[in-house]
Image 1 (tube, rainbow, N blue to C red):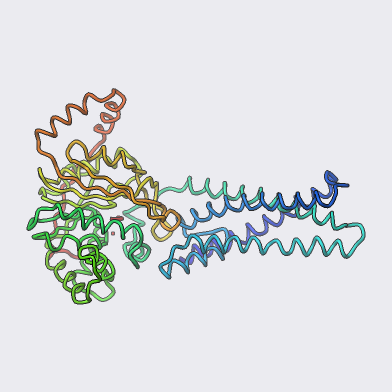
Image 2: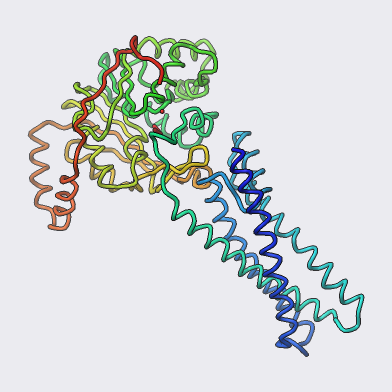
Length: 457
């Protein structure tokens, strides 16, 4: 965190000096050029107004780029914008507008010295007229507009060159929980409601697998009443260790009560009591019987098939490669037995999400992509829900889907029909099938043996 503040302060100082230099040079250059000499003052005023509009357009482009920079790295070229961003996040509010307002206010304030210098010089000497001062301001605005646009392009280029962080070395479960789960944010409001409805199709009194659960519990509470037992799987031991802390009721373990409360609200349509929230937490703890280290790259991530598998924000949030995402999804959906239920969620058209100022990959999945990867083995019901979190986390909508596994005969029939698709589609599938797989067998850890030990669910 301190590093991002240091970078932001340095970037603010550099950008302020650069802006002043470019704007002052543009203003002085326009006056010295004599291009507008002799122009009626009313036309000079009209040009000044036009220069402000041009500057506003350039500033708007830079504000959007700065928002993306804050979301991806936690840094900004305007330290007051970063301060407003961090303050809004701590209060559980969307930081996009406060960050933009702080940035714009700073840029407007920078105009005051130009007015003071231009009209002060006009008052102090007869060689500089009021018209000269107005021309200077118009030139300075045009220079500032060019600078804002150039800074936005530079910011975008820097973001495009950034490499994704590593789950093995850069993932921080505690920071992830702090960034995404202090409150029930818009993506989880819709995801949990969808999950509650989808699980009504689940077979009762059967084990349920949550694949790629991360360090989180917020989706698990919806399955507690229907499942005979709950198995939680993730790739990172540190994520499973964070879950174990909650199961054991350790001090400092994440507080999931707001998510339990929202789950019960979705189930019953009324506000739950504190006793009901506590009872659901206790029931969930009692139903969790296994923590499993899993790898979506393994063709058989676990040696068991389930009546219900839930995998939300897992495969899409583990890679930026669509072909790898499809392979992960095939391996995960292969754990659903015939007639069973699969429930999933993914970030919609997202190339990366941020945790602690680090950018982690996302597969840029769309509605058609998700529907295609689930067929022919499932009859998928797919929805897109807007969340407006593009600046705070890096995505603006989520994909939600559930489907029942169809019988073997119907899978064969659909596969035959799919094989008769255009040659281009068949070639894409063939390339996808040629990807290598991991040979490591899953490490299955019963709950009682889980020791200490970090991926977005």
